Image (cartoon, one colour):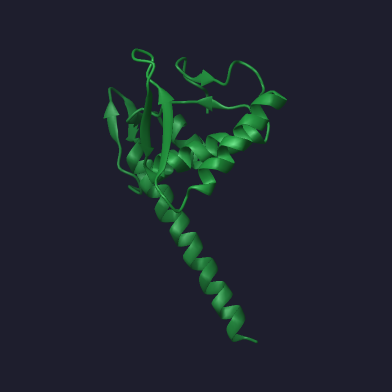
Length: 152
């Protein structure tokens, strides 16, 4: 997937040893608080007072994923996903080829619309399709495991 111009790379470089250590430490703190609500304390730039910001579970998971990548030394880019995706962007999210993705659209597996003569897909529809195929894959695997267990 090509990155849009507004993608924000992690300092235009690979994480340093210090970055990795910091990310790992912060990740450990957040993971240690998983049983309770996680709150970040950050200084308000105007008042210089510490402000406590509670993190939702989904925000905590997103932050943990980001910190995990940095702690592993991986380069990170934050790419905002627009509400309407091109077929190439959506195919990249599903890790499939664009022609295969077009066939999914033509077979009405994922809703889409046209902007001019170009197809556009809502990001939430792509994520819903991905969740559905992941669940179907998981169910099929569970069934195989159960069949294998019955044979013994």
